[in-house]
Image 1 (tube, helix red, strand yellow):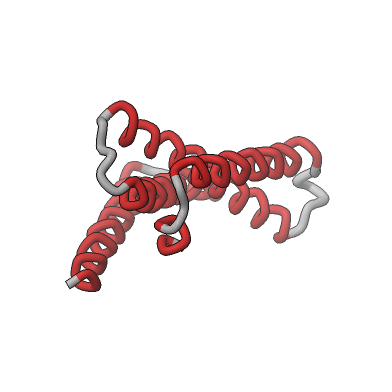
Image 2 (cartoon, helix red, strand yellow):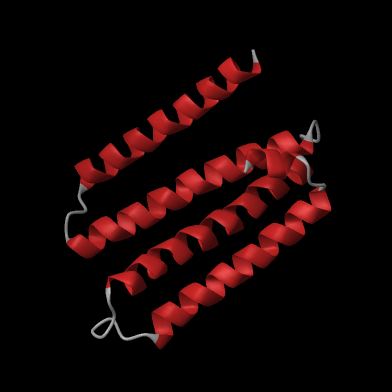
Length: 136
């Protein structure tokens, strides 16, 4: 996925992510307002969480890239900034969806939040270190 992002221009990336974000938000809204949870099966709950994850990740990825490029003036290799933004947006989206899932199951507490944050932090550090080893 990161290789595809690296080959895009800034404009192509913004258009693709905006379109994906809008489709994901529309899908999530349809599932939220158009389907009864009492009549829904396991697939609808899966679609609810996946569409929410994609919607949050795409929106945060756009926001993160815009902040990095325009506000922080980090224009060195925009594809690198886009990859970093996408990775961190996926991790933050996973955190939000994970917390929502824990809340729905009634197991959300301070220690489950801390555990999920610790796991995602370790994943981020692994991805950063793995990328450096591959580059060497």
